Image (tube, rainbow, N blue to C red; front, side, top):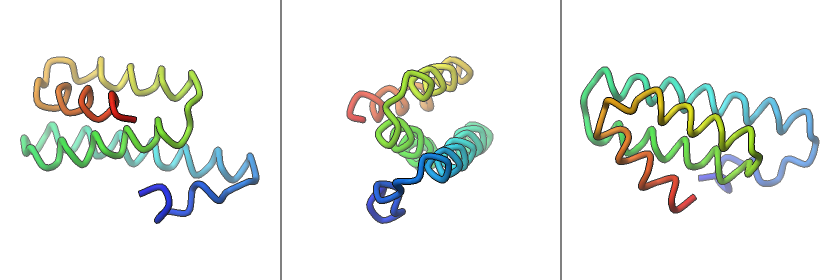
Length: 90
């Protein structure tokens, strides 16, 4: 996914930060939308986007963001389980 998006090839730090912020925003919207729709495929896709953000930017800030996102949806077992599964492999 990252290779297709071309994120790996972005060398300019400012551009990379903007792209990562957009990826995180998209992942957050997808996680929120998946919990509203109660559909497993949406959980899987949302968790994949979060994992892609973590894989793309291994900073502690991104790790904290992913943990906070997981905590925000801790009462939605399907979302939490899928996030855990995808983040383990990120």
